[in-house]
Length: 356
Image (cartoon, rainbow, N blue to C red; front, top):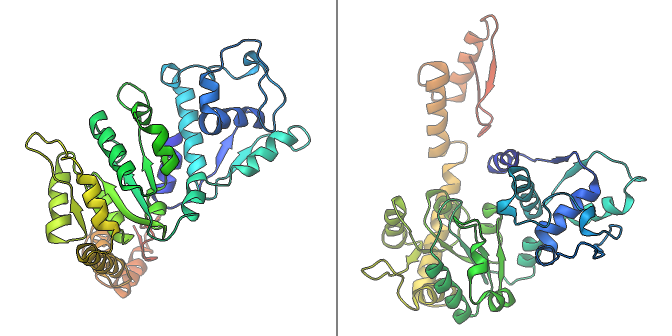
């Protein structure tokens, strides 16, 4: 149930993967989906001896079912395991609880300890402040192969390091595999299938965010004080891109032709503005800092977002508007005399709770 980990990450609650198969099997899946994925795809000899770090020599018939199959043609369980492994590999401090013991699987368990090293975060840590272009188009939006190619070539042209989050296409294939310039791109930057976006945006090495302007991504970039290159795809994203460039002025928007195709050199132009030393980029960075500070103020104890959220919650839970902590305390005293009362802690935003 990989969605449990996603929910925990979204609401900032620590999570642990409880693995109910051998640690050896976990290592196999980890190697299959993370470290040695290409090797597994090309391995079809039934009698071939396969040696992986920390594991005994194995032949293909010794591996778990479906390991050598195309993941998208496999059953739901394998897809779920793949997503869980990918999420775990993206965690800053991943935790796995395995039902085994050291003397039984000493080498396999030792491999688990090395998984705590987060590949893309280690990579970000090795880069200079403000040097990375972060690229992500949300969890649901699928960009065309033409746009993928354009972004890839523009990244090569600008020559800057990047972290690019790609997703699977409707046909089940990884979009990155369709890039004609994938090999060259991987020498310059890093392409991953998933990452902790808030964690990445808050990393000091990130200098700008190429985004589809989804609202969550937009708010996260503002709160993290990261300049935006706006490339909207549809719906509200187009309006949000207008706000980013012309109203809030915390980013620039790529220009498109009448047919909706991104014009040549547009990504390079926008990235140069955001990452360069020109006055336009400096103005954007000043606005980004201002908006980020305002977002932080709004979430403080007496900030507008905090006050409005508490007022809404009290309206729902207590049946009338309550505007101060003292009023909440008085309401608690009144309601706590009821039989079979239940304590509800509301979102833990500011430690305010209500009894209903």
